[in-house]
Length: 601
Image (cartoon, rainbow, N blue to C red; front, side, top):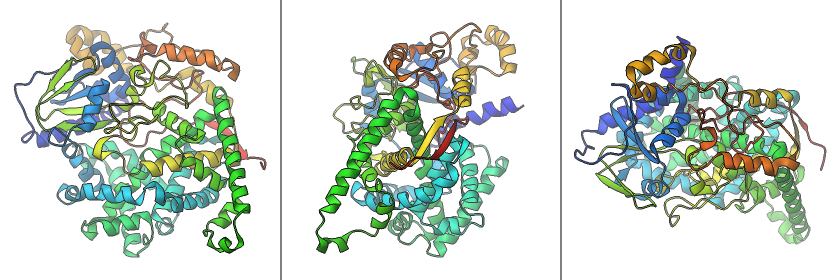
């Protein structure tokens, strides 16, 4: 029963898409247009079970078989995945009259955050503009000062011991530091048990996030409903007390034209968005730099930090006495942490070593999907001149995680952790900003409004962690990860037993509708069996990993792709949760380290 419930749970993102399209199909429909390749599927359920069970691994398998453009049937509604670079650009560049955003997320925001579409979407564009204005690079210094203070307040209790789960520690640190920075201290102060209870309830809400957005009645999701009610009550109390005044969250509410009773719901959406990528990005960036094979990059980050600190110290010594009184109130914190100002300066410089490392970690490990809907019959051309026609109302999806391993976008070493690589380029850069992070922050007019803050936050926190703490990987981390290599994508036992019968009865429809692939017991995933070694062999291992994965992710032609060697040739990192395509994408397993305060530098 648990296996069946797990499968149903992971169907949710695709049930969302089918339900949303059904709602708007009366307005978005277009018969008589040629379709792209349809992946074989089951009656009624289509490919929902396969996609829900294995997520990105199933998409990779479809791509190997059917090419860069294919369509899945999700409970009667069709979703076309696009991996051809020029078509991806079109998705983000086309005007709303051709490819639109609102119908794809309308029910999502209403069911999850309780923001009625009739109230929220008329203000959506304005709120995005306001949020971008509040988080532009020129206004990030004050936020950074608060992050530094909160880092020193929360990190000591989370990062001390012979066996620290770095996944959980980073999750809590990012949540507490970012929440206090963006929402102020009053929110946690209104919770009887403080940050611990606030984060517990928030992550309970987040855990049920995807299922809550589906048509499944909330009556059957009591944990999600209870957690959301509790977090909303704390947000409402703090808002009523004026506790958000002077914070980024408070400024956004003041600029919003939503009814005041919906302010807590908007704040809940902002709270979720503030955690959606930064938690995962901070962990992966730190973990990548802790790998022995990437020690040279870690040393480069620390050396650059020390050099910048020395440079700023010399500049401060040259400040004229009459200008001393003009130094900001954060100077006390800078004296206590001499590298704080340097860390902020480097986090704002996209050419710095830390910014490049963060962008590369995001590229390799932070996955999500971008969804749009065709507002008209459209024809899309690929780089090779081939064209596909898609009907009005078709759901269009881009999967950055898979595309970020495409050699056409990142060259032959797309599977290698290489912060020095050239940025991804799509067309003239007007649809997606030229960046090593690629598609991670979306594109077009609906790209992530908090990107600059998120990149600064991650780079700042990773530098502070590396400078102030020492981390030693524990044997249980590398051995357990290397032994498994990934979150298992094989069918559950009950499906494994009946797979031959289902294949004989259902044929391709059963295979692709249920994803009946069973890994041969004697198969070995390319690159996953490499032994841990010194950084002297990093080059040859990275070359092996790069050659193992081409544009179609061919590292695992004998079994389901697991990305266990992505940026990690020795398979020391915890596995990615490949099934989850929306929400906070932290690893599903712990990663144990010995953590302690670093010696004074």
